Length: 256
Image 1 (cartoon, helix red, strand yellow):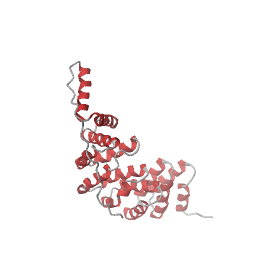
Image 2 (cartoon, helix red, strand yellow):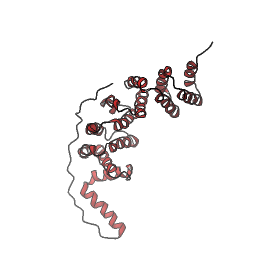
Image 3 (cartoon, helix red, strand yellow):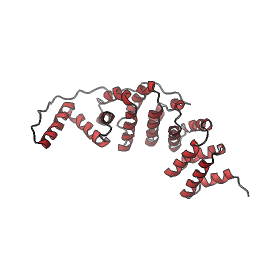
Image 4 (spheres, one colour):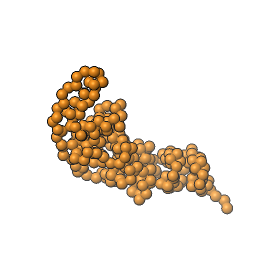
């Protein structure tokens, strides 16, 4: 039975051999064909190999945005986490700022950490200047979430918002949850000194949470003085005042 080139491409994209799928994605991207849009979108949602998914994404962005974007928008509501994550990733690759309203608060709070991390990154990339403060409030509501990698991703997204994030981080630094407060302080440290390193910033933030800012500063000075062989300054034992937790009350963004 004769098969069309597109049928053969679709079969190769779902082959068992990873190298076959990778070569097929490269071939499809090298010769963009809108008729393969649905096949590429579907493979992105289920492809297990990172490098193949990356090649599939490249093949998709080689197609005209006017046909890919509406289909990508549909995937943002998929029940499959990988489909949602890949759709968000594609938005970052295309970089069309008119898609900013598609990044809803539900996406920023997605139960799947990888989807949420992608949503944070894309939102920070596409947000208009006038809406950075509202986005900062939404992202700050996720402080303290997940493992080190998740928290680092959130901190990077917040740092990318620049000075607009400062009020939200300042409020979150007084949160009653120590994990949230430490994450907020560490993010602000990174914003002020990107070379500080995330782990060092978290360690310092946790010390500040435990001792309060004045006692933490005195303790750091004592360590430095000991290393230099000089007398340490007297510690100030006044406790740090607790702030109130932040509230994310801004409205949901419009969907596509």
